Length: 114
Image (cartoon, rainbow, N blue to C red):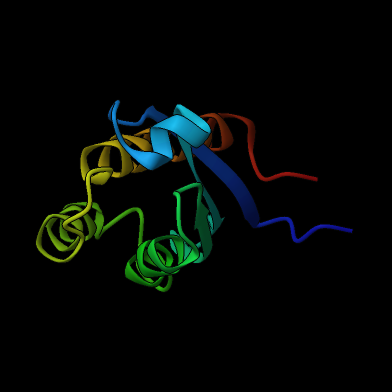
């Protein structure tokens, strides 16, 4: 049985043309497993052209709060990720945040999951 308060969220964005990632994927996905009691990102993964860049992005996000640290995560991505997919990663992170907020609003209205 899945953990009731741990939810998987995904966000997608188009990769910049002319990059290896674009040639392979066209779109990138950012997937985050979030504890909705705390907003903490427990796991994160993304589709980029190298495992190193995927791990790097994951490490910038894991352990952070999607609820309270979105701006700090974006600042860190801008400062430390200097790859061509930076804008796409940030766009996908915003999509994850938007889905998280929509889920939390629905949950507040409906009550906790059974």
